[in-house]
Amino acid sequence: MIEIVSDNIISPLGFSTEENFQNVLNFKSGLKISDGIFSLDGNFCLSAIDWNLLDLEFENFFSKRPSQYLKLEKAILLTVGKAIKNIDVTDFRTGFFFSSTKGNIELLDKNQFSDSRLNLWYTAKMISSFFNNPNIPIVISNACVSGLCAIISACRAISSGMIDKAVVFGGDILTKFTLSGFSSLKALSNKPCRPFDIERNGLNLGEAVSAMVLKKSDSENYIAGSIRQDAYHISSPSKTAEGAFNALQEVLKNIDKNNIAFISAHGTATIFNDEMEATAISKAELSEVPICALKGYFGHTLGAAGLLETILSYYALNKGVILKTLGFEDLGVSKKIKVTTKNDTTDKQYFVKLISGFGGVNAAAVFKKKN
Amino acid sequence: MSYIENYSFINESKRTFGFDNNSHSLSDKETVENDFLTSIYRNQNYNYSKFFKMDFLAKNVFLLAENLKNFLPENRNNVGIVFMNNFASFEADVKFEKTISDKNNYFPSPSIFVYTLPNISTGEVCIRHGLKGESSFYVLEKFSPEIFVNIVNSSLIFQDYVLSGWSEFVNSQIKSMMFLVSKFPKKENCEKFDAFNVKKIFETIWKN
Image (cartoon, rainbow over all chains, first blue to last red):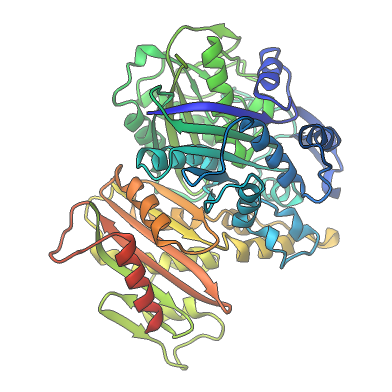
């Protein structure tokens, strides 16, 4: 069995899981409208980290300045450092798993095309050697699904006996590269996003990093995980929600649906993603389970999303809280689902994390409350 | 226990490609300049026009899978793909960067941008062959038979077949391979899918 030992979230809403949770509980959002970012034309609604604050926090935590590190590197060092505080990760039985879509892609903008720091494996190795872990770190780059896939991959490595403990970490920062790309796909909203709402018109990008430590244990927090393909289109979700539904079916095999506190959905607030998720949820006969989406607080944090949203949802479950879906008012999908409109309490035992991404990938996982 | 149903490879330095017991090599005449992957596509008379829209990585993974298509089972609901490399989507990244780096010539292309996610390559193969199992993309500094086998085997617990592969550049030339791994071998004398056999096949291919 696999236990979640500790975790951390670094986002515009705070530098600890607790701080992030308190801010979400009070409906604070990291989303702000900014113009002129990366000297691009137009307004963008983004959730951006204050890097001066992060540098101070880094200096406080490590007692040294982060000047030699790139943004993503220092943020990840900080989140991993906080998550593994008082945990030994220096042995061969501990694996490092890194989820990111674009890593240090900002280097391309600086014409550093041959910089080895552009490699995702290089970032992962830099992090694992900083914390003196002797193993080859594993990088998962599975688009928006990466963060949850990294958790699933780490849990499989523990279940198979390859390792006893895993440090899962990941994230992406805001860059001209991703902003231009999502903008060219016409996927962005220039107002705070509205998951599952009738007026939703796109996503907001956000930056965040997160880390989670898992270990082989007598208690069980990670129950099951599944990754399934739509085999439909590289950049738009399946109309029948086949992949997401199959993933849900797989992880819910031995779960009493009456004991599911909530589903932490992807809820990007794009027309097609939310419609697809609603279809999957309804097909899986989960229409009565509260649905919560966190993009209204953090934006879409890409490589961090699956990890950050799992950590925050797990924290909420342990506190007996179901979080409000910020930005949602009137149901705007074709299936009747119960999207949360306020914070609520629960004493149920499980939550489901659901997520989908480009490349037709979907993933679902079930987590159980701490004993 | 898991088994190697077959494997395919692309070795640009030797200008060879193919699958087990069926290796082809391209002559000078058959090789499009600096584009070994398109040369393979033309040589094999494939007919999948989407190929020309793909980035380098997706073409690479597509061709490896194309070599193995005749060995795939009929029911694809429990067939997945797990692919790894050490350069993610670098070629597409550079291509996309060129469309946004000049403020006076800013034309980000969505069709290039999507390929800057390495797992679009595995997605393309799933669409092509209707694979509805798991698709995952990993990035590692170098090929490790132990890690490769462990990750693929732990994915195979949840499905019956996995196309699993590795790709890297050696002296700017592509070297890549893909195994069709199964839980229940379809043919006799299938070799076990373990680190020892993977390493053996890996080394044999690059020698020839």
